[in-house]
Length: 118
Figure 1 (cartoon, rainbow, N blue to C red):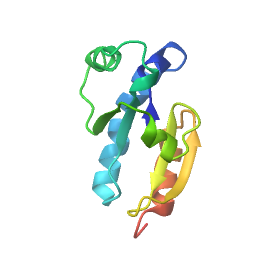
Figure 2 (cartoon, rainbow, N blue to C red; figure 1 turned 90 degrees about the horizontal axis):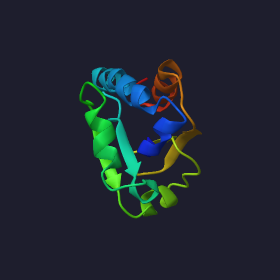
Figure 3 (spheres, one colour; figure 1 turned 180 degrees about the vertical axis):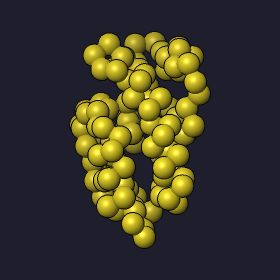
Figure 4 (cartoon, rainbow, N blue to C red; figure 1 turned 30 degrees about the vertical axis):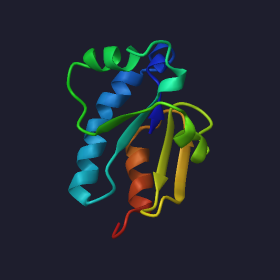
């Protein structure tokens, strides 16, 4: 999932990031690909924006959160908005994408559709 901390101004992003902990647990339990979140640093208002937001979540996230400094990764995957969910194959081919927030049940259903052995 690609995101930026400024989304908290217009969406319940902090709540959604915390809720994704359960999605990450489901993925681990089923042997599905791991969930990762990528902060689009070039769009952040300050270099400390992500760290500040994460400190105020209340509980740590149980999945990888990376910072993309240049925007090239998002560009390479054709990200056209934030948040942007993306599911890739092991080779990096895009299998599915979605712009905007997504209920966890729908996200899990999409991953299950493409996951090996699902």
